[in-house]
Image (cartoon, rainbow, N blue to C red; front, side, top):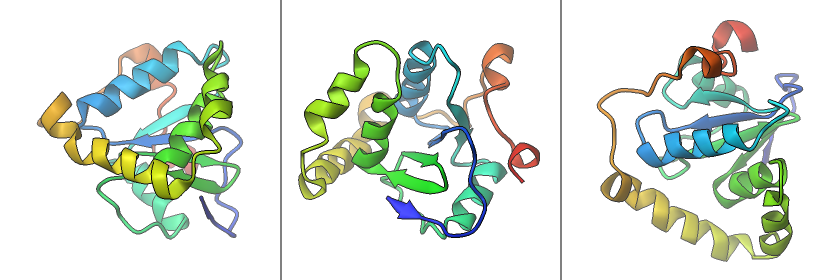
Length: 147
């Protein structure tokens, strides 16, 4: 987790994802289906909004961090982001957090990196960022909604 001391936080968790990655798009759909309270918002890492958010957190680009999470002015990456996301999902998914949170980051992050490094090969890549449908689009942020 990376903490940002300036006042660029949000009251809702924001998931930043690789917009050309098929696995990442599937992850967004997975979260949406299990987020009945519509607490999560989304932005592709390629968007201007994501770049603004990441600059506020002084985040250095890491091509293996295909999903990042911003909660209460804190940035979670890799396995930390994944665990914090499942912790907030509906149903039994938070149990996964409690089963896996004890796994040390020096073990969990290399597993994340192994998958992230092969995500395009295994799951494919789009030539351009995925665009959500109208219903889902209102849960996506742009720079005007975040600034």
